[in-house]
Image (cartoon, rainbow, N blue to C red):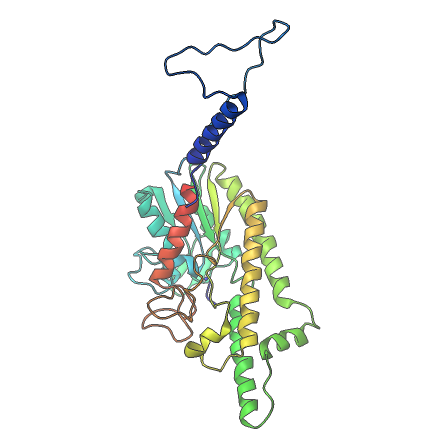
Length: 341
């Protein structure tokens, strides 16, 4: 995207079984037979056999996929500019050797033919089924990496379709213009970017319409993934929090150049994007992996040692408004938690 401990099922079942046993013993007024003694069920008054208690079964946990694993997505997946970069072609996709798909594959013991990372910087949903042109050559359609043998798929895409980076750029421009107005004595707006979008769209939500359109395309692609890899478990990975809930905490990083109201506007737009991804995943029978919650406090306005996303003026060699290595590690942890259940 160029602007991208809960109990186990076995434990839950064991607790449920234990609770059921206690309730049965309590209701019968007995602590149960002594160890090694036979259990004799009392006959009903009419001499018929008593009804048998329903057996308590422990649900089996879903096994962790053992591959092959295919990773699909945009720059938030590929790991734009994060060193070391993979040797795979095309170089224009900018796939990091420590992006979250690589970290997930390593944790699951998948390598060689059991792991295929075909994510690519700048990818849109159309690039899943069509070739993508990059500065370093053409990236084949990402879904071509899928086969009936594929057992695990992660996909992080949609931000470019929704034009989210365009929104960020427009907000930067509107706030710059507004700041210049302030220098000549004009009153500054509380949210010039939000106001600009509302005026251009007649008070509607232009961004939401783009997000919805992106969702329609993603929904079709998720069906195609299911057709090509019917046995695969599919995980739709959301986008991490770019900004904090409290815009005031961004002043040390962004200064006063961006109005607090517009920072809130950008937070709202990203929430719309992640909400769309979650709904589309659920509709397709896939699992949504939320990155917004685990990345809270690790946004671009956090300190350099804490942030998962780089600010507009990033650390040397990294991409602005994109995840850094810590962000990829955080994403990998969230994906593994979902995959392992």
